[in-house]
Image 1 (tube, protein in one colour):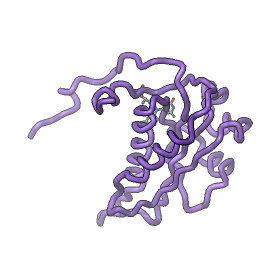
Image 2 (cartoon, protein in one colour):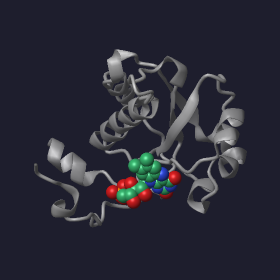
Image 3 (cartoon, protein in one colour):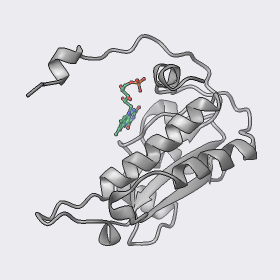
Length: 169
Ligand SMILES: Cc1cc2nc3c(=O)[nH]c(=O)nc-3n(C[C@H](O)[C@H](O)[C@H](O)COP(=O)(O)O)c2cc1C
């Protein structure tokens, strides 16, 4: 798929088929995530690949929306940063969230290229995530996405016009 078609094709999928995701596809997605750039090339992130069935009873606690509680996608992927080890600018800005977001975006775009559906989830319960997934204390979960075959198709994108978003100097 052409890069520009890929960007148009990606959309937030909130209804999935229960069909399994081929392990070769998961591996290719993880390889792409590994290649994501990080500030100062620190690579201080962890990717958690979760079998949905294993946390079925905890889905609602992880993220309260009803579409997630009944999630059919076979996998969920979480990206955690390790803020204490990420690059910090001299004015103290920690780039851990930025690094994790780039990793997640690589995952999401790779999944789209392989005809898989995803949806960024930032609205999860942080403490529940740490507990359910038994994450190391130094890891901060930043975002999750289901990974599976979509039941819907990309619709029209609601976006601001470019002249509201871009300034030229
Ligand atoms: C950082 C981030 C966090 C998000 N968190 C959630 C979320 O918690 N739940 C959800 O349903 N969608 C979430 N989304 C999806 C956005 O609502 C969605 O990307 C936006 O409405 C644009 O729609 P599209 O992805 O279909 O183009 C999130 C997106 C981003 C980038």
